Length: 217
Image (cartoon, rainbow, N blue to C red; front, side):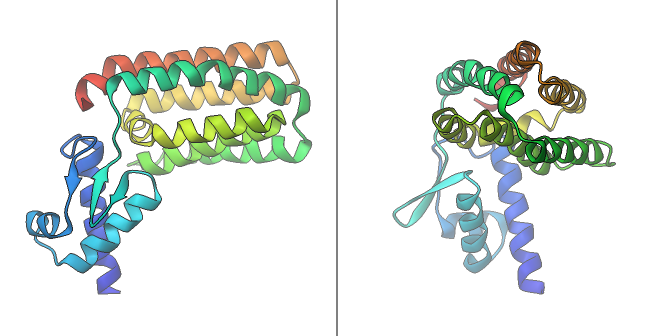
């Protein structure tokens, strides 16, 4: 139990350092140096880094790890590619989603609302729930190409997406916008679903440009 708690503590410390920009994209993280830096042995550091790799925050590079490389230009271009695909996915989902998929979307929306109302909402959990919602919309579109491309883009934007949910005001806006997207899909209003998702993603990009990129890069 003590070992697991120590791994969790090291994981949280490293994750926070990545999210806060203390460890920059492309920065090499060697087990021995990280262990020395945070005052822990190499075993929990190794396990924490492996967990971060599974979650997409770092990548394995021979005997070291590297904070997932991404530039300001990469982020903007990824969002520019993502926005029209997300909007089209919403349009198609309004036409093709099954009742079971709609029920799952609603469950995710409710889970997001519950987490947002917590005294200290977990930005990682919110980013994961957000990703699940968008992934389900893409799945409901019935277009495997759109779904596959969007999944790859979301993984590359993981660090940025977590940062979005550290903002109180943006958390509330995200919750409201996701609810509106769901309502239009559930109402089978394809045109409205397209517009709501397009507006939502444009708002996200604007927030990222003004609040995340200047802080992170």
